Length: 78
Image (tube, helix red, strand yellow):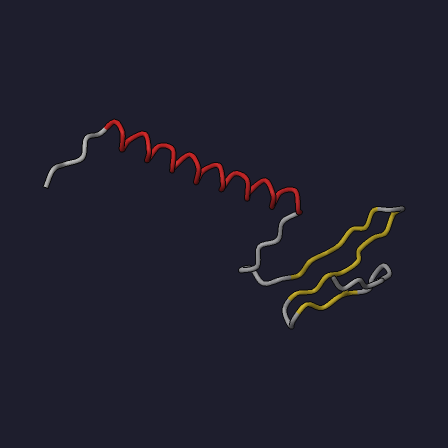
């Protein structure tokens, strides 16, 4: 992990197309601005984790439904 110290108004560059700007520092809270291309998705960590969990739940649900349908619907004989 790279750890950098920045003051209000200073920026961090990631590659040539992402800029993190320190907007405000208030006690232990920091406001950060992010400039990135439209194709780059940006989430707060807790939102990202919730999305991952929902996707995993959807996969498990789909697998469960598939298993249930296979036991209910008889397979066609060749």
